[in-house]
Length: 351
Image (cartoon, helix red, strand yellow):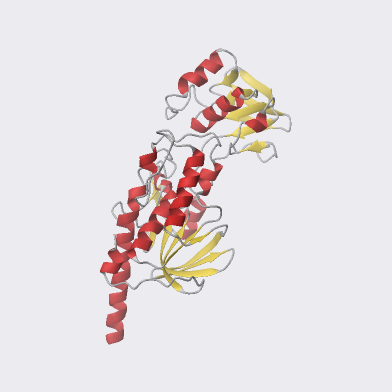
C-alpha cells in the first residue's frame, strides 16, 4: 500500500495551500474518489479531494427509502467494515458509513467547491475552482454520472413541476404524478408514491420494463398495474409537458394526462462536456472513455479515471462494488509516474 513511500517520495505537509504544487487532485468525493484518496494518503501523496457538493453527493440524491442491491461488505472501502442492520444497507446507512470513513482517514476534502476549468498538461495541471486555483502533477476524475440526468428534450421540460430526481414519496400524497421511464428509479418511485396515496401514471418507451429492474420489484409493479392501482402506457413517448398535463404519443394515439408533478426518470450519463474540455476520448456505442485498464490512465497523460463514469452511457456496468478496488493500482501507477518525473528532474539538475 505504501507505493510512493517505498520509492522515496516525501510525506506531504499537514496543511493545504491552494497555490502549492500537489501530487494529486481528485475531483469527486463519491466512494470511488474516497477510495483513491485513502490509497493516496497511505502512499504518502500530497492530495486534495474537490467536490461541488457534499461528500458522496450522489447518494445524497438517492431516494430516501432506497435499499442498495449490493450487500454491505461489497460497498466497503479502505478496509473498514460497513455495519448494517440488514444484508443490503439503506441509503441512510451508506451516508453514515462513508462519512465515518472520511473522518477515520482524515481525508482532505474541499466540499461545495466547484471545478470550473482545468488548464495545462502533464506534468503540471492547473485546476480552477469557485474558490481558487490549485496546481497538481496528476489528476483523477471521479465525478460519476448521477449529476447529469438524461433529458426528454421536449417543450415544457424545464417547468418547475418537472424533476429529474426522485427523493421522497411523501410530497406526492394525493397528487397526480406522471413518471417517465421503465428502469429501477422509475419503478421504485411509482411503487413508493402509489403506496402513499399518489395517483400514478407511468410512461414507458419500450414494451416492457427494463431488464435491469431488480427482480423483487418486477412482480410488485406488474401486480399494481394489473389491479389498476398504477396506470401504465407502454411503447409511448412524451411529446410535450404543459403546466397541467403531459401529452404523450401511444400506439393508440395521442393522450393528454393531467399531472401535478412529472418525474422524468430516464437515466443519467457522464458529463461529456467535461470529457471534451479535458481532451478525454471515448469510443463504441456506449461512448466509453478511453483508458488503460491496468492503470486507469486516460488518453490524456497524467489524467486518470475512477468510478462509474468508466462505463460511459452503459451506466449499469460499473458500481461501487466493482470499482472500489481500482484505487490501489491507480495510485501505484501515479506513484510510478511521479518517481520517473523526480528522477528526470534530478538528472537535469545534475547535468
